[in-house]
Amino acid sequence: KRLKRDENITQVAATITMAYLCYFVADVAWGTSGVIAVVTMGVLSKSFGSPFVNDNKLMEDFWSIIEFLLNTVLFSLGGLVWGSIISNEDEEYPEREFTAKDWGYLFALYIFLTLIRFGLFIVFFPITKRLGLSSNWKELAFQSYGGLRGAVGISLAIYLDIVVKRNSSNGTNLEFVLQTNKLFGYIGGIAFLTLTINGTLAGPFLNYLGLADASDTRKRMLKTYRTNYRRKLIDSFVGLIAENRFSKVSFAVVRHHVPVLRDLKRREVVEAVRCVHSKEKLESIQEAAEISNHSNEADDFSSILTFLDKLDDNVASKSSTFLVPAKENLMSLRDSASGYRLSMKDVARGPQGMKTSDVRRLFIELLRAQYQEQQEAGELSAREFILLALSESLEWATETIDRGGPVNDWDYVFLTGYPAINIVGLCHPIFKVDTGMAKDRLDLEKCLAFIQAHTEAQKVLKQEFNDDYVLGESERLVIAESEGEVAKAEEFTQQFSQEEIELVISHKVCKILLNQQSLLIEELVEKGLVKEQEASESMEEVQENLTLIGHCSQIIHPGEEEETRNSD
Image (cartoon, rainbow, N blue to C red; front, side, top):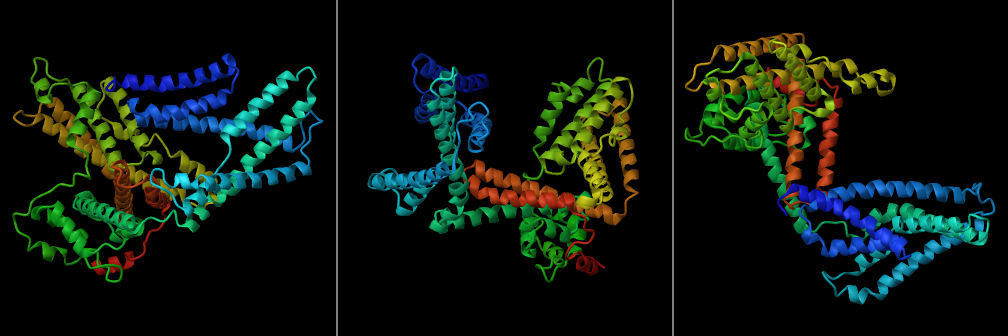
């Protein structure tokens, strides 16, 4: 039943059952190798069973985790056994020793195994060259060199060691125990050498052969994809600075922390403005556009509005669909959390209407949805504990509402601290981090997120009730309580200077843009346009820049002094 999720989980469970059943039947019932039997079953299942798997991603992710965990256990166990052998510290069998002569045999065996692998690939090269997509001598060389030995060999050696010791428990067949000791030493040594030598040099050897280089066509495709998602980021940037809360963004900060926009040109901004906004909305970016004049780094933005005045009045108004999640998502979150199935107006018009406590609970769910939306848009990061603090404030506020109290989530916003910063603060001489500045910035960012969530939740609540229905006393009371909470938050921001607020807002915009860049890259990978390996470098760059923003202690960024001077 392909469409039932429970069946997908059952299929995953069935693969575990079959693996253990295969091992038991082969090893116990038939007296053969259970390890080889399971490996054979895995190869056959992958070859012929894939079309019957409902959710291949679920199956692959599950077995990737299992593979990682079991490989960790296997190599840890094998490493302990191998370590006891080569250190000659086995108290149970002190007679067995791994001597210098054995080390010589180990290195000779490693060389011979490598030569044998090369010989086998060379012998079968005329056949493999004519199979599938063909092959060449470079691929032959790397396939011969890249043979890593580990999991299967170690598991077989551990099993053999257990069986021999079990049959020699009464002191007999000691020579077999010593031979098994030597064998395990060689197998563990070969696994160690292939991992350290072949594994370490595989990358450089691959680059030397030129197999890691992308074709010219592929490079042009990747450049096109990068240009496309860069254009979308520019559209998002223009949409952000058009909002009142981001109108004071410093372009110097954005250029410093968002490398993909570092060479932003005036014509690109103009094109983005034309695509995203109508002429009426363009006036809101005037101040943001005028404060930038980077004559040395990129084109001047100061003449944007002169160009915009010439635009046709009938320019289509477009909203950035990438910036903000669909409104339906917000409503579905609100409805699923609060349990309201009918429209709010229908409920309020009912015989009993909505109680004030019900409207307050609804408003709390709207706030929760707003915080979730901010996280999806990249405005909030769970790693900085801001989202956790805001979410917990809603839980405390819900308890207050249950006791008949008002909406007072601001009173609980600062109950949750910043554990990571506190730990760094204890090690201040080592990390040399100004934890006080970091806390102030996070507090201010938390406050701005709080104000934004309440403002948007008020709009949603009004939209739900005030169409052809006048707001009731309960709704007006809840909105008034929310406005009071916003007033408290705005009063809190007054302890910060305007420069500090603008710096936090600029960093916030950088975080949003970088998170959106990562989402765009992930989208390209999901669509199959970019390989995971190709996207990994860009994702690492995004993560590095996000980390730098979190650790940024600069007050003046490169180019910001010139920007301030030009604005004056």
